[in-house]
Image 1 (cartoon, rainbow, N blue to C red):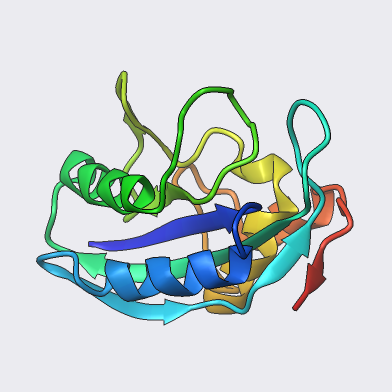
Image 2 (image 1 turned 180 degrees about the horizontal axis):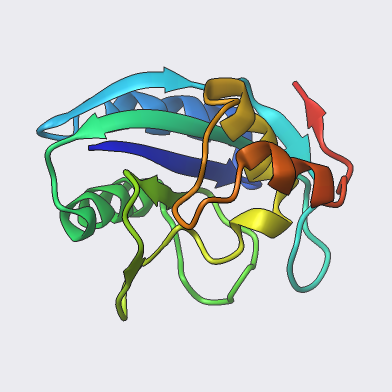
Amino acid sequence: MRCYIGLGSNLDDPAAQLRRALEQIQGIPQTTLCASSAFYASAPIGPGEQPDYVNAVAELDTDLAAEALLDALQAIENSHGRERTLRWGARTLDLDILLYGDQQIDTVRLQVPHPRIAERNFVLEPLAELAPALILPGGTSLQALLKQCPPNRLHRL
């Protein structure tokens, strides 16, 4: 199954966090890291004063079920010291399943496509770098979403 993972960090050398996460993603069983985007800096979304984020998107092929992939990604987050104390708070590493093939998933643990994908240029820009002609489940083109998304101080690193 072709899937796309959003990566983000704004603590403890964010670019190094993303590089290490990409290396760890390569070790997920039954999963191949096909490509990763450039890194992008973006303004934080969330409570309080936070440092800017570094974001990227990874393209994977996996034979894992979506929730098994989620478990593997959360294990990587935990190995980076991820703490889930404040929603949208600063974090060492955030790994989100953005797309899982053309599936639409809505469970207690997982929503795919990611529910806020259309609002986040720090996801859409690197995703477009990997798959510019992508059509999301439901028929919306990635390019249409990009045109409607606010800029949020995004720049490529």
